[in-house]
Image 1 (cartoon, rainbow, N blue to C red):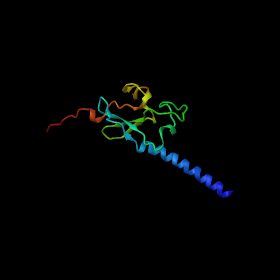
Image 2 (cartoon, one colour):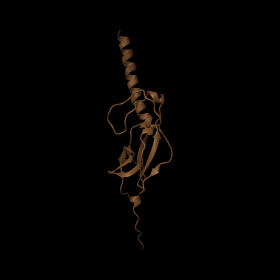
Image 3 (tube, one colour):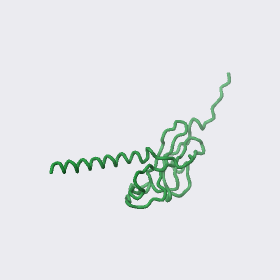
Image 4 (cartoon, one colour):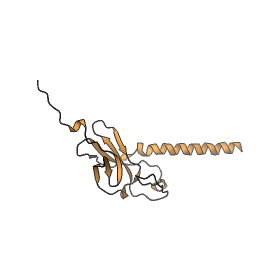
Amino acid sequence: MKKKFLATLSACISLVGLWFASEWWEKGLASSLGDSELSPNGCSRLETFKPFWLLPDFFHPEAAPNDDGEVHWFRGWEMPGFYRLYGTFNGQLIGETVIYDLAFSGGRLSWDRGGGVWVGMTYVGPSIRDCIGAKPQKRSDP
């Protein structure tokens, strides 16, 4: 009885560990879906990524990008992906969305709507209004 319990407990712990590891590798090993979009002031860039999934799409939960609402299981995905927003001069990650179905996120890219960067109705991160690289450098002549 004790061996069965330990085997079951060990299997559960392994599955939970694998789940948390998969949460990392989905984004950590993601591949880019094309060219990045540069902000009008040149301070930030937006990139679109496809998650690295080992299991078929059907086994991944689906949630709305701006909600902490309900998660739907066993639904088909048309185009799973997520956005990352980077600073152009230091390469720092500024914002990132959750993985969601990009086919339903339609809309324009807005670089400064309400102080943030949005793709349609999806918030990606804060907008950078001013950066050193966007300012003209003063030239000092001797």
